[in-house]
Length: 169
Image 1 (tube, rainbow, N blue to C red):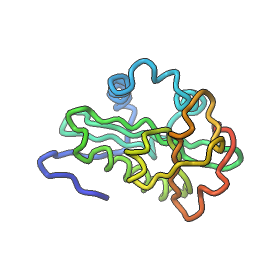
Image 2: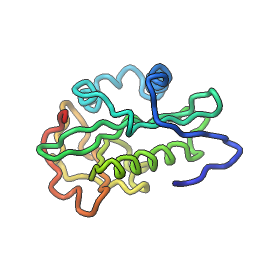
Image 3: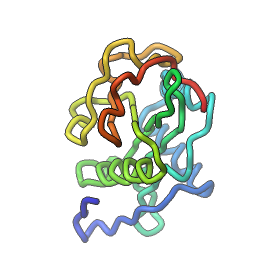
Image 4: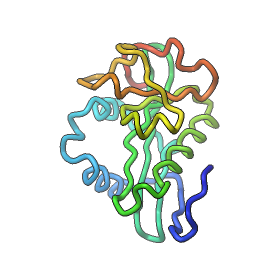
């Protein structure tokens, strides 16, 4: 896990129900009302995120950021959909998001998951090990820019053949 500058004093913990309101408020701030029309939101309507794979960042009592993961099927294969990842503007670029991503990947790997996918910005996620998935391989339940569907293999070869409609497990 990466280390953050000590002066930030950020602590990372598993998400609990007590964080729901703060996560929703941050998601609203980061992604606006349009977030509900996105394909990833359609997936989250089908099945809830998994708190054992989701984390928050706190600075004392101040909520700094969060990452959520949802166990899904991609065709006939289990996978994890990551998102949303959100960090308060004052903490962007300081490593909190990258730390949350590392924790999420580690938790998924330890839980026996083999692959994570997300819909996101290549410039941010590719340096974290994510790679573009082939066009029309992961079929989201709604419109999505396929160039933004990225995957992370948690075991060698886990992204090969990952294809099909995304749905609940």
